[in-house]
Image 1 (cartoon, rainbow, N blue to C red):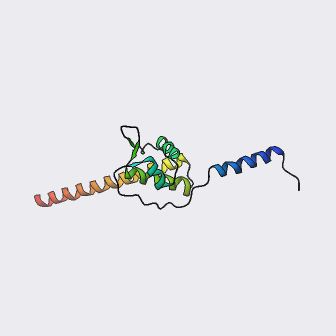
Image 2: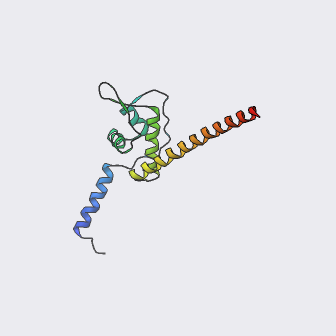
Image 3: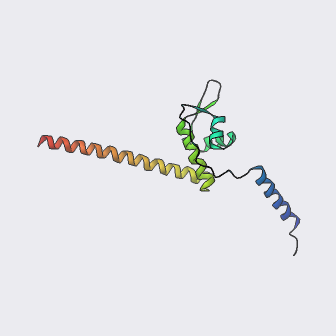
Length: 137
């Protein structure tokens, strides 16, 4: 069997060494989020199992992730931010979406939730109006 050209060998070694530097995240996506008001980036990193630099990158890519900053510039995540980060992690690592695909998927989910809320509000309004009509006649 013939050996591959030297350039292909170098590429194969580079790919293997890159995988060793950036291991594939574990499949444990069922982290419990403690019931607290704010979390620091280190705590969020421990909960999600994602390094802080990745969390900061995701903040720039997903507009719905906007942690507050303390007086000293420390990021303060709310519980809903942590839940959103866990969802982003699941979409990217488990379902293998690209960042753009995960962003689209989250926007679709938010749109569906908004439509459901609007539908429920309209249903309450309709039933209220029906009650008024019944009282008038």
